[in-house]
Image 1 (tube, rainbow, N blue to C red):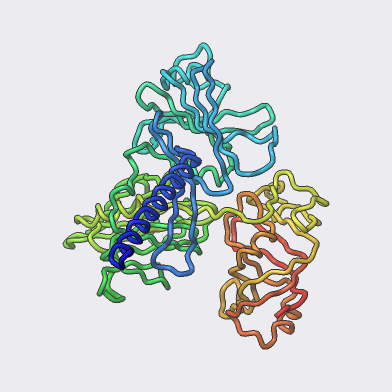
Image 2 (tube, helix red, strand yellow; image 1 turned 180 degrees about the vertical axis):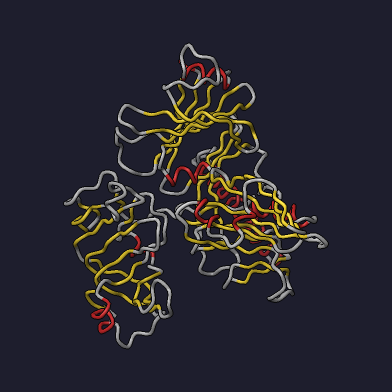
Length: 488
């Protein structure tokens, strides 16, 4: 065999081997793809402008037959149930907790060939549509995805309630059943939409920014830049104090009304159009998913632009989104488009959880034992997820960032522990419904100061703690723990 024919044979063999490898790889991928649930996809949102922002990995449930999809966070899961006897299709949501017969179901129900009027008649046997009897409460007209809908509450004999939203989708009725007080599922429902109606589908190269402190994320156009210190968005090239395209802020409040009363110009902000001198204020009710709010349009005579603000109350805070440029011009539509992308981020718990409604002293939660379970303010209500102190005994070794807060704010001259690593988050308990980041301050400040002597604020350290306490109330409160030692 000469060298040329030998080389040709080698090339042929290499070619055959390559084809075999590619063919095997193709069938391997095809077989593996068949194992994926066809109606469940993984949504990965990576904030592009904040290295410390949350990275949320959400699953997306999609139902092509009934034309809807909804996002939900891990460790949540979904189960499909066909009730052919009643022509119902049910999607059940499970938050990963053990089965509990006293827990109300979290469901989306599709009733085939059914109408809103028929549903109301079924809820109120023998009554006319729209007439409210005692069988259920608070029937009212509302909107979901700009579709006319109705909401009402249905109670159980034990006193628990569902808030139910119903709307027509073609020949079918869709019912979304949210247990009253289930804040996480309320936020998941905010991600419900009909196929083809997703407001974020055509945003092209828009960027995502997550404000971890506020637990919310939004999208913004590529020609904007973000000042992360003040959550202020301006056009690229503009510098402060150029008026912002968008400013995001959050303030503590016991209610939306109390926040309004504390505004300097409260007299102007009635829930109707008012006129004062050369300026008028248009106020209208709007919503951010399931969260109700108001929009304020401040129009000053003689000016080409105006200030537009939207404000929403949720979980002890009022969130405001304000555009200081072109609120009345074409940029007003851009403001609306940005606002439509806002969503509150549900950060799934990695470690053991405790439910304020069922917790008892002596319960084992992970490696710890509950030693205190009481209301934070016992004069207002029994222990709930909005009013709770749950303390634990037991040692935990964790890793995170030591931060010393100076200044004159709530945490003035206080040593705290923040930004726990993922391994630490798998052992430290969280409370169901508590969507704050996991951080705490030391309850033995003087001793902690001695143990941390020489450690620079902002340093990542390994520590051992005891007496970890979850403290929750709609005011400026934080979790605590006793620092036992600094490991390194």
